[in-house]
Image (cartoon, helix red, strand yellow):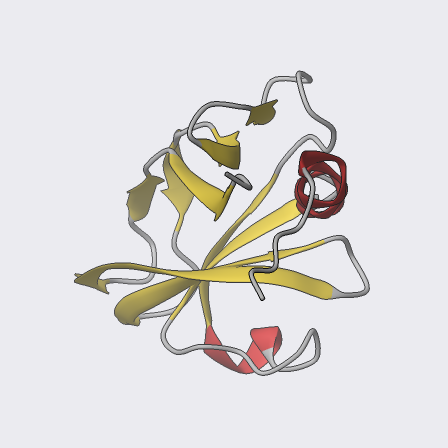
Length: 122
């Protein structure tokens, strides 16, 4: 039996991701909100909500939420960036991989635009 999840449910999950107010470049994948601190290399405060400048929820062949690029983000610790974590100040809501690159404390980094997406039911 085929199973699918409706667009309204997928959009609710995307809307929850869009409540994130912090974008953190990490040297590893944090397991939870408390774990972010141990792997933080750079962090940026972002604006929550779809359409507020940092998040956009959209349809298409995939249901997706996209965050904008952020440049000149201050690097606060040296290490190799491997992940970007998103949280709302109390809960880790999403993590994605990034292009591995060595970051040096005192410099800046650009976090490119990227998206989280789910397949729409067929």
